[in-house]
Amino acid sequence: MSDLAPGILIAVPQMDDPNFARSVVLLVEHNESGAMGITFNRPSDVQLHEIAKEHGMDVHQGAGYAFIGGPVQRERGFLVHRRPEVGDSVELEEDVFLSVSTDALRTLLAGEPESYRLCLGYAGWGPGQLEREIGAGGWLNSGISSKRIFDTPVEKIWEAVIRDLGIEPAFLVQGGGKQ
Image (cartoon, rainbow, N blue to C red; front, side):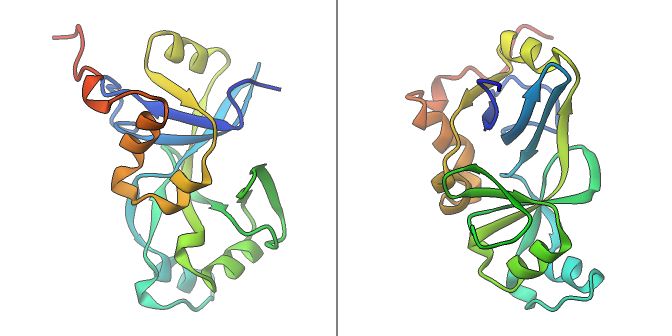
């Protein structure tokens, strides 16, 4: 069992990978083979009603948007939600579940958008890669908070999880030694 997963990774301002600028990642798996996580604070331009329509489901047009879960396999959806009754779900933390099934998608699309995030794609790290990135100061880590995932306005999640660590985001220096 990893000390990092399940948990949260927070990209520092110096993160130079545009896939992860100001990202907050739900780290689902971390072991000697690598790590896998799902970014949950970057809305995409894909509307949920379009995804529902593709799968023969019906949801109102104001249902909101999917999120960019990461740069790997963006055609694959991951459902991060807070509904324990949804079948085929894995509990990551109290009040935070993960599912990848179409049945779970159908159930969640029929409910309130505030109770889930449909994230397209995921972030992946090879063996030792995440440890090196953390060691180089690229990521902060913390425990999972359903309040931050579901109840915090998406544009405020990054700053909120940093403040939860007792750090003022303005004190994290933007930039670095590269020219």
